[in-house]
Length: 240
Image (cartoon, rainbow, N blue to C red; front, top):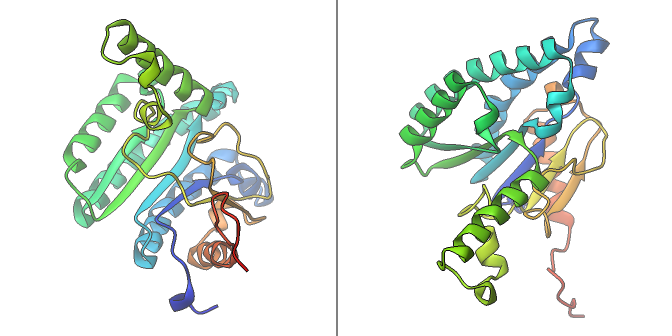
């Protein structure tokens, strides 16, 4: 399919899976795969922008990832700090709006400060939007949203009978961001893994055996080709 024939999704979300397996195949430690995977992110941001995608959300670290070996978690946090520095520079150069979704309160204060500065300094940019999920879990996000909503109900800011889907969406980490049209997961796994479960209600899913460090523009185009061929009806009856 020619690129000009593609139906470009507004928002693409990605579960970047397979870094450890990619490294293992090369006889290297898992952290080597994570480092290469982080390098791929910036390339895919540029590729997504070139194709006309407006929003990209990536799953960098889940609430469950704390269960990994302490040495791996420590290495990942160091990598996040390094990546955010690169992300800041790229964002300033390319008018890229960046936010981090997830419970950042569990992160080191230095990392929290990096996130605060990155979000503050890019908040007025609107050429491309990047959301990075760090210490994110969809169930945790919804619980946190419900707590804030319940507090506002208790304070009389909103009545229970006035709560709608749109109201609840406004309390999520992704408030103001359109739901993903297409979700891509690499490495052959075919599950959501507690990722944007509310937001993915009507998303198209694309699973590929490609490991994340090998993901590139050609793989992204293949995913969009599959998306283009699908009939997105949102529950409407297809007319003959």
